[in-house]
Image 1 (cartoon, helix red, strand yellow):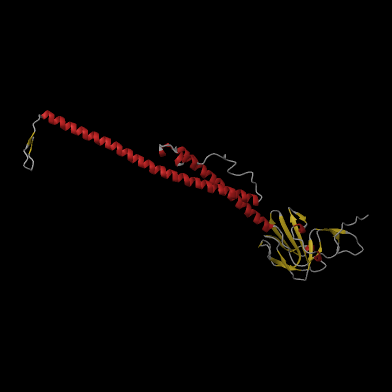
Image 2 (tube, rainbow, N blue to C red):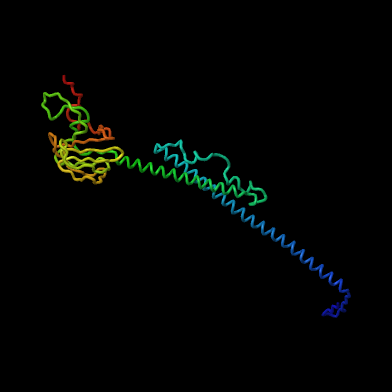
Length: 313
């Protein structure tokens, strides 16, 4: 081998055998391959390490979001219990507490950076993630079912309130209460009593009569002693009767709302003057309408308090 420099220096001459040249070529190739393997291994290590750091940050962020979701679910649980307390619903049958245990560290505690080993994200078991995610999903489904139960309870209570005959059916003066009384259709010297199954409220003819609760008109027409009569079924085993009307404004099968005008006061049927005979029935039995109505002033009660009839010999 002859090396001739571009300067005035003397040429360099080297002599070696073919075997030595092949040995040096093989040595150079081996060193090159070994260096490539070493560099490749280090590159894979640093790339893997960088990927682990990125994965660790992502998993820590996910752990924080899951812990925040758990705190929100705990707030929903507290709100659920408060609502059940306000609505007098059963609080000893919580749908989550009844199905799972309580206590212990959260997933965020287990996966926080200061608790993780130096191995990073590889030290976290996937089973923990799947277990926590499944538990959050089950708890959320149970809490949703609990809120749906509360919504059903509120709706049912609202429906029951609207179906409860709590309004006064008309304006006027109470002339007869629920219970035994002396018959107004008999002679004054006759002490024969009769059971009065409702209230009599007197006023001028054609005074408006109102439905005392939501319901469906089961009967509207003539009924002997009641005269023109309207019967409304309110559901929940409750119904109301409005007798002696001069005219009914609703027909059988009609749906009526609480406070809706259903007729006019009159004196049809067995009656001594313009008034409304009002009855409330529960489970097919007449009950005192005053138990559903707000008490009015004492000046609205006319006549003596009804007495028990004397037994006839």
